[in-house]
Image 1 (cartoon, helix red, strand yellow):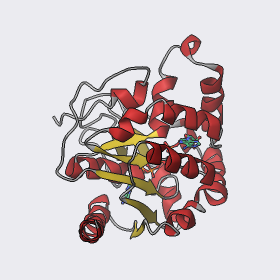
Image 2 (tube, protein in one colour; image 1 turned 120 degrees about the vertical axis):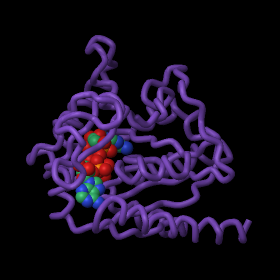
Image 3 (cartoon, helix red, strand yellow; image 1 turned 45 degrees about the horizontal axis):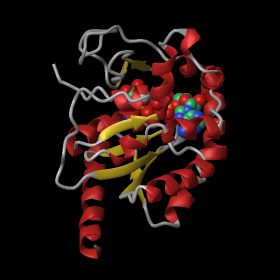
Image 4 (cartoon, protein in one colour; image 1 turned 60 degrees about the vertical axis):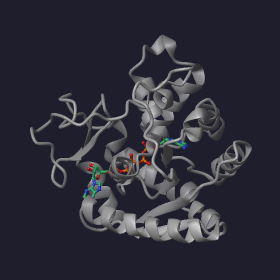
Length: 255
Ligand code: AP5
């Protein structure tokens, strides 16, 4: 059974520390993963985390972790955020930004980071830029996963997620060894509330309107690495790694 980082500092904040020490790779990777909901960002983040040692930081995972807390422990902003999420709408920028600011130590982590689901609007990208600058940190690249929308929607319908270690499966393309049971930690898998057809529709609209413009935002900063998200997760991973290596070798020369 694989031991995964518990990401406590990211999922819980409020002074929580990770139980697993960060990996300290020779060159920490600081990446943003972009792409439509369901394109496979989380799946690639898991593969990249294993290879690069960087921590998978998903804002969606923070909300889902908060949902498992007692309702009375949720702030009004967080309760509202969970309602937005259920409907497939984006959570307000100020709620998301407050949440990320509270977790700035994760951005400074010496193991590096893989941001998944954040930033999601131009306002969030601008805020992230300011936050990283204030900590003297620079992004290495923004990996943009690209796939026609109808294929993305098929991926969402079959997704099953582990409530405990957050591992992601697909009933057809990435089935767990035992149906309904997580390969990593043995918990029962579940289907996300926002993977219902009516929420999927709203999420895709929110993506087109608010998140797709981020490709241009980061292209202007010469950070975008477009990756075709066709094929198996391993195929996509095999396309991502050389693109990152090429970029970091160019980077090393220019430093
Ligand atoms: P979030 O959790 O970030 O969800 P998302 O962006 O909608 O992305 P997903 O997790 O749905 O998809 P993914 O690309 O990670 O795909 P996955 O790897 O799972 O956000 C959820 C909600 O939280 C938002 O709607 C919003 O309300 C709120 N929120 C979060 N962050 C926010 C922010 N910054 N601002 C405002 N609101 C925010 O793969 C999908 C399925 O496909 C899986 O079953 C997988 O096994 C399968 N699969 C993966 N790769 C392949 C492949 N190559 N071939 C076949 N199947 C594959």
